[in-house]
Amino acid sequence: MLFLTTNRMEDFDDAFYNRIHVSIRYEPLQMPERKTIWRQHLTRACKQNKNAGLWPDEAYDLLAKVEMNGRDIRNFTRTAFGYAQALGKDIEIGHVVLVVRNNLSLKSSPGLENFLGRLEEIGREVKSAMSSSNAVEDNTSPGGMTA
Image (cartoon, rainbow, N blue to C red):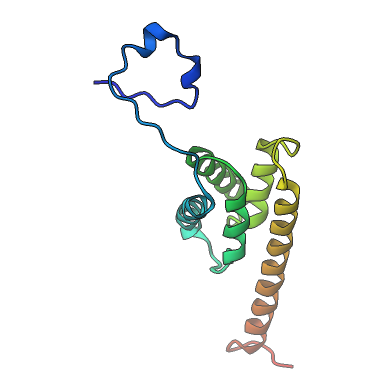
C-alpha cells in the first residue's frame, strides 16, 4: 500500500493515474478551518512563551483570511518559532508576519498587505499593553518603588 499526496493531479499521465485505485480529493481550506489550524499550531508554539496573551482572537481572524493550506500554516509557524528562538524571544505576531510576507507573493494574494499591516498594528498594541502591564507590576511588586 502506498499513500501519495499532491495538489498537482493534472500533472499525472494516464498510465500513472490508472494505477491509482483510490483517490480522495480535499477541498481548499475555508476561513474557519484555517483559523483553527493557525490557533492549534501557534498555541503549541507559544507554550514556551514567558508572556501569555500575545495572540488576540483578531490576529487569528486575519491570518485565516490568507488563503493557504495546513502544511503552509505549519511551516510558517515553525519558521516563525525558530526565528523567535534564535532571537531569544517569545514567538510574536511580528515573527509570523515576517515569515508570511517573505513566503507569499503580495501581488498574487489579494488583500494580503492589508491583513499583514493590521496584524502588525495588533502586534504593536499587544506589546504596548504588555509593557504597560509590566511597568505597573514593577511599581507595585514587593520591594518595588511606588510613586
